[in-house]
Image (cartoon, rainbow, N blue to C red; front, side, top):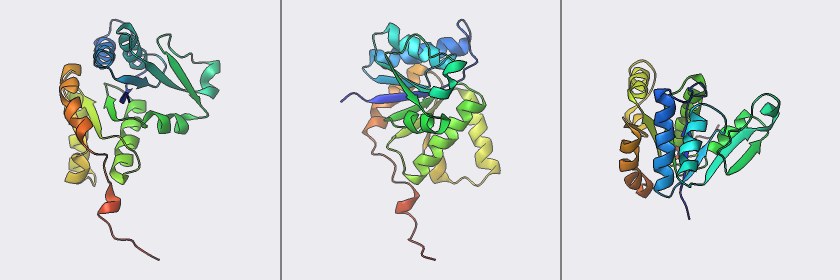
Length: 192
C-alpha cells in the first residue's frame, strides 16, 4: 500500500517565490519516491506541492471545501479531489496520512500544525510524525516551549528539517515508527 504524505503550506506564495519553488520541490521529491501526496488542494504552496508531484507522475489528492467552490478553485494538478463539507472536515481528512509535513505558512498553516500536533499528543491520528520545514518553525515552537505549557514529550512529536531533501532523508525512519499512543497510555482513568 502506498504511503500518503500530507503537506501543509501557505496559500499566499506565487510561482517564482522561494516558498513556492521549495514546496514544488517537496512535491516532486515525494512523488519520485513513490509516495501519494495530499494537500489542501488550492493555490500557493498547496498548488506548488501538487504541481511538483504531478510533474513527477505522482498521485496527488486535494482535500477541498465544498462551500468554498463559489470563490476558490482547486488547482489543476490534482489527480483526485475530495470535497468536504467544511474546514473542520477538511482538516480531519488532511491528517489521515502516514506523515505530515509543514512548509512555510501563515495562520492557516499554523492552525493545521497545531491541530495535527494536538491530535498526535492525544493519539487520535495514525500519523507517525509531523515534520516542520525551515527555520521559522523551530523559532516559533521553541518560543511555545519557553512560554506555554509544553513538555518534552510534546516537543518530541515534532521533527525539523531545513530543506525538502532533509525531509526525504528522514522519511524512511519516521515511517518505521509506530503511530503515537498519546497521553491515554500515560494517564490513569479518572472517574467523576
